Length: 70
Image (cartoon, rainbow, N blue to C red; front, side, top):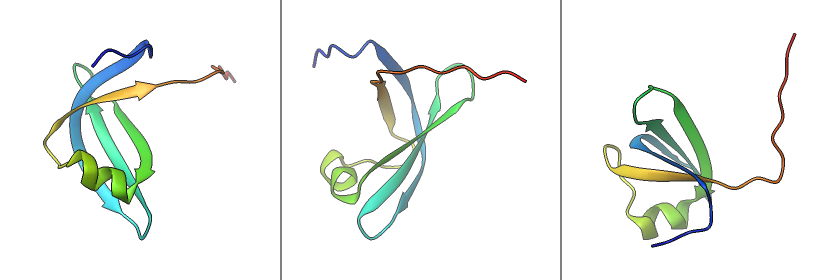
């Protein structure tokens, strides 16, 4: 599959927390130990057959990037 989204981060699913409608999916990124959490529908988890330990690609599409300093 080819996508226009440039921010594609590969990693491994480390946790899936299912709610009644939504799910929280944690992906540990390759090469750094950083974790990205995505909130997706429970239905999407089932349709994509997501499982802990599976490889996944995190796609980030945003119109804003913010930076904060103290």
